[in-house]
Image (cartoon, rainbow, N blue to C red; front, side):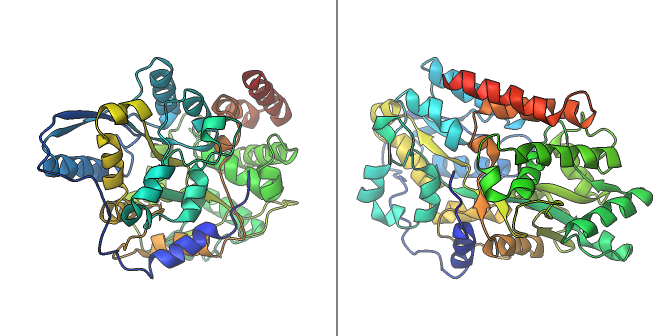
Length: 426
């Protein structure tokens, strides 16, 4: 997996300098059309997901402008891989949705193998009023470079919401106890020990849903090269750092069973001083002024640059090739509407990094700190679960509890995950 050095940072810098394009292109809105069409759409915009209300509003607006179209919302939570199970089952059983907002990278492989995914290249060339608003650097994340001949070098999904992962800090709590911000490991550990002694949770982290802990600490340990090399020796070091922090009491007492949404609430309620999480959390923060986002500090002996981060465009809009043809292009029209600048701005106002040129008003201080982190990044690496098979990453995530409690070594766990990776790939 390649590093995309400063690509996303440049996107962020440009997006706030460019005004909304006057013409949004062919977004597929045609109130005069009378044919009745039903479009099944599967996303993870449901429940506690921060974009749920924005998604529902977009559906409502599209149907108001197109009374002949009914959008059937089959949103499924991302937690516990529920959406992965649904999408893979639907595609395998011949019940694929018309439109899917789903993960890219390794997760795209089984969908592309089915041959059912619409290729966007011709549409991108044909409708330049629409496509000219999409950053080419964002499309690089949804362009297939694997062995499936039909899709090689082709755009298989349209990106919309980019992301970063970093260390969230409640600055007011640091100020209260005269602590410097955790810009290096010594300051980070000092903060952990101080907050623990004051009865404040140092890090609002879930071991049960440990996606971001795993990715950021492995990056810190191995740098981009180690992080982006499946099962690199530095992965063991990264997992052991999490174990060490757990033994120090850095996480909530119920971290083994705590869900990520609950961890976010602890941070938002100022019951925790720090949190390692993604840009999607910004919209749910209660205090958007006294909160700052920064890179996770480099661990002792780590190979990362202090500004290396996790980020990218990890999801995109897929369309069923056959269903789009059967329904006279309405699934594609719907995706064009969702990826228009005016709708994109509403999603990015909640959180995330734009893949599409738009103007987001009233950027909060915490959101700006995230954009600044992206702009200054030495490198931006995609998450591990976009690089190895989901089954292998799930093994690492779900069994991390055994590592932190000393029931299994990190080396043993990684060997088990690699075995899954190798067996599934055969």
